[in-house]
Length: 510
Image (cartoon, rainbow, N blue to C red; front, side, top):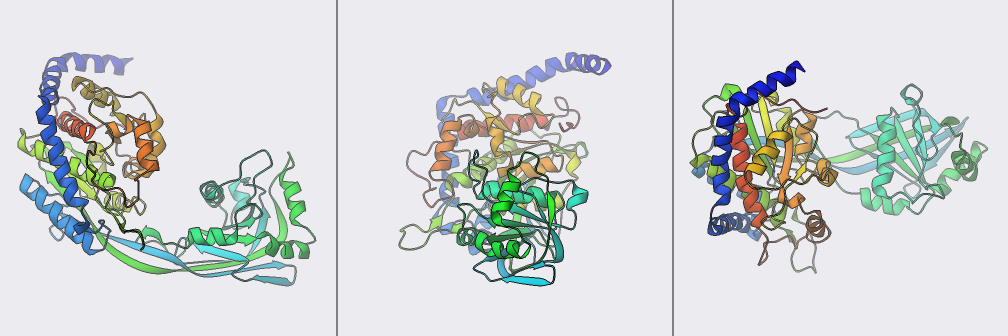
């Protein structure tokens, strides 16, 4: 009660200047329609450059990256930003080293008493997320269809999992299957072996998994170890152990099923081949009058997939116009308007991340080696795929309910004439954007945009041009909502960078 009372008194003291500032912030959003059209044209011009074939699909570590960052860095310099790396050895461009790993070697053997049964590549596939992983002579525990025993019971042991779903459930797809394996690995298993007793075949798993996995450099030699074996191949092992696949399936379907050892040991080994990708985050800064008071961060990923199709397709490049040339264009226009405005109290950082499409790796590199203490970031706003909805669309919040900054966001948005959606549906995508990384590092981060205010339009994009060569700047591309989002973010930054309206940092909601 005391805390609420103090907060009420503070609001009363601040209500007059806060209301005045909000009124000032709202003015640009209520300008004549031609002002919005001018902003849309500026966004379009930037998107046409970044999503042109000249930029080769903006793939990290390629000439397309060099061209992208040189052009974008020049734009930010002309706007009036300064380098935000805070590293004289690497102004503007913060190095990020990514390792691409592709499956190279796989070995699976199983022991029953004194007998060892080997599997060839037509019967087993062993995979690791690291350079090399090895399990020798580890006991095999049968976990049915994904039951997770206590960590103490699973540690140092290999979990044996059935791939087929129970009769009353839908067969798991690759995502669901991976989720079960990941849960067992997180529960302490040394490795997971999946018997492919359902519709999935070893060939289909191999085709899906025979692609690079990406990670930041500097990770340990080993990694998660998982294996897939054919039902026919593992039947030989079970026969040696005086059991059968039918017996395992009946056991797994018992209501009182509990994981248990099988008297079988596993020898599993996997390696990967590595390719090093040297890429960069671009970091600019608008210095504030009181940098000791913290900072506001805006970010958008600049990268895409480069060449992503093969002949005879006519268009081979994934240009990434909406995803995410639109977000980078919005980030740049926010910077332009803030730089032209009155000085702010706090620093404002502008981060264009690399390798988002490879697993949010540029954001992770920023968080692991930040140019400022992460705890000093009062609020962070991510911009991704904003060119979806028309003007007048409500804004959705990705990260809704996960930070302490939402009341201020709603206050500023409403003062600016923007409707804020109450839906939590945007949180479905929380783990698919750079803000997720910052949230894990306790930085109050949201993605607030009209693109997530109309989920039907967004889903149409995901079902259509998303991650395809057809994501290009097309005639009539919708930029009304994106233009309004730019102006809203200008208002949000001014609010959070002002010591009168936001005197202290915001606690995270856990």
